[in-house]
Image (cartoon, rainbow, N blue to C red; front, side, top):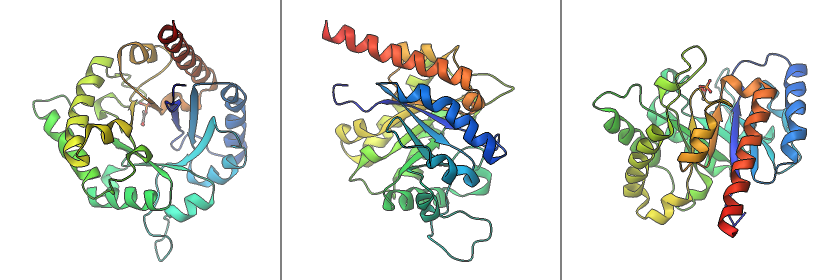
Length: 265
Ligand code: PEP
């Protein structure tokens, strides 16, 4: 695909799959469709307990496995934690970090330590940022979040970093209030400008992959595909609905195919 990485859909199952049987069943129901795609990839992020089991079925480049968080130290007296090393040994290649549903449990320093640890273990962090509301300070809030996550992070391999813009006002279920592609592009501009100050060159920032997440489904994904510069999506609510998810994969795949076709004409 003209050397571009595949578009990705990150399926964050959160705490919504509650048995090994369900985790396996859900993954297998999506897997066959995803394995046939040419331009699209799924990163499945089950609850920690099921990462290993799902990873055993993730034997294809189109579907990989991620954790929903990880503790930055490898081992030690940390009751209830799952370390980055444990996550890696369980088969995860990605780790969602800084999700807004966890931010009350961790400081920005914790998040940046986790990002560094994930990179050191040769996994890919999927770092979530996003403002709480579009008030008069929203750009400043976002700029600060970019600084907080990137300042301490090694700058040499930006292609190993994924940043998900997830405005808190747009996330999840009952509110169903997604951002529009225009709002995403406004935020992306702020994020890229601030990242460039830290990574020094526009070229480095172009290597980071940027995702959108927040009440996304098969009804609104086309707005982003058609009108936004987006490398993929992070989905929560619909991530355990195989029917909706498969429609979304199909829409992404068709869009990329059309785009490539129009370039080659
Ligand atoms: C999320 O919580 O990361 C998320 C994108 O959730 P939802 O799709 O339900 O808004």
